[in-house]
Each structure stands twice: as C-alpha cells, then as structure tokens.
Length: 151
Image (tube, rainbow, N blue to C red):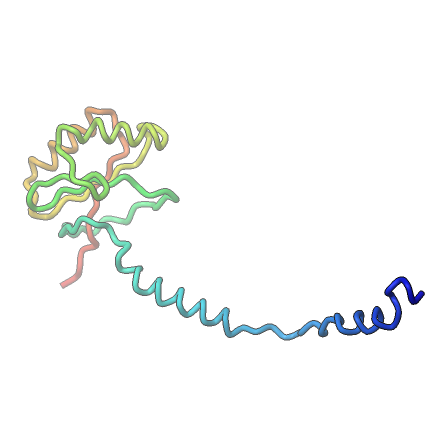
C-alpha cells in the first residue's frame, strides 16, 4: 500500500476536510435591515403615487363608485381648460381616437371612464367632452367628485 499514496496521509487529509456542524440559529439582523430600508423607500414614494393632474373637484353627497382591479381610464380637465388622458395632455380633437385605441387594447368600449373636471371649468366644456364620449359609443362614463364636507 505504500506505493499507492493512500497511506496515513490519506486519513489525515480526510480529517482536515471535516465540515463544521450546521448552525441551527437563524440570523435575522440582515432581514430586519432590508425590511427597514424597504419601509423607508415605501414611506417616501407613497405620496408620489397620487393622480398627477391637480384638480379642485366639486363636492357632492353621492355614493362612491365600485373600484375594479385594473386602473381606470381618467380624463381630467383643469381650470385652464387643458384636457389630460391619464397624465398626458391631449388636444380635444385627438381625445376620442386615442381613447378608442386605448380601450381597444384593454378590452373594448365597455371600459369605465372617469371624467374629472375642476370646479372652475365652464359647464359647456364639460358637456362638449361628455358629448364626444357619448357620440363615440362610450356608455360607462362617470363624473368624479369629492365628498361634500359638512359645515
């Protein structure tokens, strides 16, 4: 056996490669560190996730609408009569074609559309937008308001 090279040095070699016993405790410090960092990130970014077009909505006593799982299509009209589809400004003549393209991609004319109008918007401007939506075949159109505050 001396010629094979597996003599006493082989036994010593195996002893040297023994593994340490498995540690049975879980170190939670790194997990707590990660969770605290995520908490701070979400606390800072949460206020930024609100609707991008600032509008002073009128107040009513109407009940709130049912919320669905997907993000609703929103048309906003600010006090300068600028029209926004979601967060991007759009011309009134391009509103219906772009809205049809979006609804076709999302599932057709049965899509609910929310219209948000500033309280200072002229009534005629709101009715012009609503008329175009109705004329294009959109039937699930809702006006968005704030809850009326009691004096």
